[in-house]
Image (cartoon, rainbow, N blue to C red; front, side, top):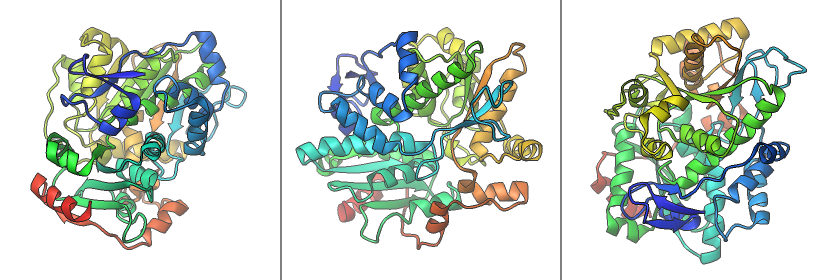
Length: 450
């Protein structure tokens, strides 16, 4: 696969070069030059494979000659050694024999090691980067801004890997207590993964990463690499679970259209879904759920994209006022607004509405949602109000509710069981550097630690 800058299609790179460079030389986002399309017969055969093996086959179309089929199969089987379940809120799985009338499913993408959907992209990206760097003895310094889950997933994926240092920038007071504990307790005191608490918002963290990559000397001195979704190596693997799970849903309920609802911040998750649809995945539409930070929902309503400063909300991982992947979405639709509207529908919700929904779902079904999943499910319900016919509703569950235990327990007045990996992290001593949101402060810290 050849990649090109979304700003200038004459600027091209291989997958490996795009992955390690993160951004194109003109500052553009890398996009696949051509997205493969699979016929219904081909997709049926791929859907019969395991998720890991289907992912490996898809990855073969997006990587380069450095990744043989055997390498990709081993890579994906290692990365995806956990379940990808679709369940009803009453506990039934996606199986028409068990739940023949079921329409409303949660795609639980939080069964990986850091209990968030970011594990899918981070683990593929980490293994792909290590494979490339191992063959060339290269070194990289990874800068990643996180609004909650990205940093944990990237830190876990690159922990203790030779030749790589990871610096995770997160906003002070802008992540949950559990997320902060995860981010600041990885590895040992001299770990290759370090947490930086930025006295600002996530947008400040994201802007710092962009400024660092815009500084040619800094980029060259430290061989900077981004692990945020500006890196195409983060976005492509997110298409894999949409492709495979939509095939499972179509096989179970062949006569029903399929609609995914995605709680959205930086729009990387939606971009992955749109790529899967262009590959032939049987997906009819995408519903986008925003919190108060809703520039994309505004765009869908007005045709005008207006980024703005982010504001803190209950669903903090979506507190993004300038989503990185908006240009990629426009590129996929060749900047045709009407075409975007044919595929995407959106709605935004307040914290009060989100809390009320978490309580109602738990009361009616016993199912406990994280705040982000609740926003996505609210959007699906609102979308379904005007749809008379039956369709398969799949809301993307982005994180385990225990990652937001402080908020969810307050809302439900009940204790959320803490999975073992989180319980272990909560007992560790936090290690982090606190700094102002300036490039000078970041440069000084890198000079000492990178």
